[in-house]
Image 1 (cartoon, rainbow, N blue to C red):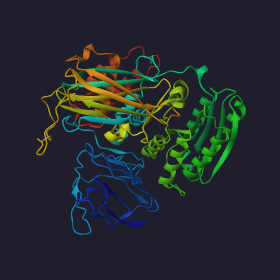
Image 2: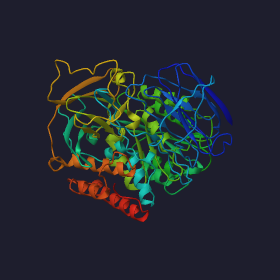
Image 3: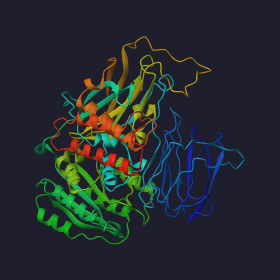
Image 4: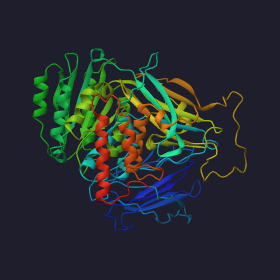
Length: 607
C-alpha cells in the first residue's frame, strides 16, 4: 500500500520524518528524510511511500507522537520548542534501514523549501539484514544554562537495554546505537542509597565530583531509592499473563524461556493471589481462567500446554487480558498484566493509537502493564518499550533463565509493586557555577519544562525497592557551548535576590502515589562542593560512571572523551562493593567482551 501525505503546520514547531522501505521504488533507496516546515501554515508534502509494513511514531518536542501506521492513519501533535527538538523515530520494520545524511529538500506545495536537520549524529538500528527495530535516539547535547536554565525529564525504571546489549555482545556483534539506552543500563544495577526515612516513598542522594572521561568536567549523580516492601507485606496479586504464542515465538529462547519465567513467578504466589492466562496468535483466547495462586498444579499445567504457531494479533490479546484482570480487580491489590513477547505485532487490526488509548485507560483505572521481551533477530524493542511506558509499567528483556529469576523473583517488588507514579525531575542550574550541562541518557524521557507542574502529563514509575540514577555532565562557568551566541534583543536574566550564590543547582521532584491524582513536590538545593576527585567518591558514583562510560563507548558518542575499556574496567573494578548477586562482577565480563570485539574488528578502543 502506498499513500501520499500532506501536512499544514499549525503549531509552533514541527519535526517531520518520512521513511521508505526497500520496496518503495518511487523514492531513493533506504532514505530517511527529516524536515522542518519553513513557516507556520506552510503545507509540506512528504511524498509517496510504501507503508504496508511500516510503523513510524514521531515525537515533536515536546508535543505528542506523530504516528504513521499500517493502514495509512496519520496523527500529529505540536508544541513550542522549549530548549530544542527531541527527535524520536521508532518501530520501523524495514530491514537495512540506513540514514542518508545528505538527504534531499522537502518542498512545500507552494514551492517553499524546509531546512533539513543535521543527521550526522543520528543512527539507525541493525544494518545486518535482521528485522530488529530500535528507537533512533539523538544524543543530548550540552546546553547553556543562560538559555536553558531548566532541565526536565521523566524517570525510567526499564532495564531491557542492559540485558539486550549483553545478548548482542555475547553473540559476537556490536549493538546498534539505538539499542544502547544508557539510563537503562545504569538502572539495571542496584545501588546502596539510603532507605527513605520520612513520608515520601523514596530517598534522594546527590553527589558531585570529577568526570572520569573528561577531568576538566564534573558529573552530578542523582540517586533515588524506593522504599522496600517485605514479601509478607506485599498486597494480594491479581495477575494476568498475556503470552505471545505466535509462530515467531517457536524458538528455544522465546516461548520455552517465557514459560520457565512464568513458572518462577507462579512459585512465589500464595492463596490470596490470582493468575489468569491469555494467549494470542492468529486469534486470542483464555488459556486459564483466574486461578488461586496456591493451585500451582493447575497453573503450571496450563503453562506446559502452550505451543507456538500462527501469526500475531497482539491488540486483541491485550483487550482480552485486561478484561480478565477486571474480573478480580481490587483497588488495594497489585492489578497487573504481564505481557511476554518478541514484540512482533504485525498481523490483524492493531491500530497503534487505539492500542495506546486502551492501555492508558486501563492504567488510569489501576491496571498496570509489565512487558517482558525475548528473542533475537526480530525483536521490536522500541514497540515493547512504548507499551510499558503507556501502561505505567516497566520493560525488561529476558535473555537467560538467570535474567528471568532476577526480574521476576529477586526483584519481584520492583517489577510488580508500584510505590510512586508519574515521577518527574527538574533541575535549575546556577549559571554562575555551571557553564553548560548535559543529561546523559534519558533521550526519550525529556519533557517540556512546563510539563513538570502539569499533573496530567504521564511520567515514569518507581517500584518497591527500586533504585533510579541519573547523571549530568557539567562544565565550569568559563566553558559555554560553542553555538551559544550573545542574545540580540534581551539581556540574560541575573539570579534573583533569593538565589544562593553557593548553590550549584536546585533539584525538584514531583510524584503521585499509585492511585493518586495530585502530585507532591520535593525540593532540594545542592551546594557546590568544589573540585572532588574521582578517588574520593562513593562506590555507587564510580560504578554508575563506569556503566555510563560503557554506554558512551558502545554508542561511539562524540562526548566519550577519554573513554576506553581500560578506564571503564578500572572504574568498575574499584567499585564492586558487596555485590551479593554478582551483577557488578558480571559487568566486568561484558567490558572484556567488548574489548575482545574491538580487537577482532579493528575498532579503536579509545580516542
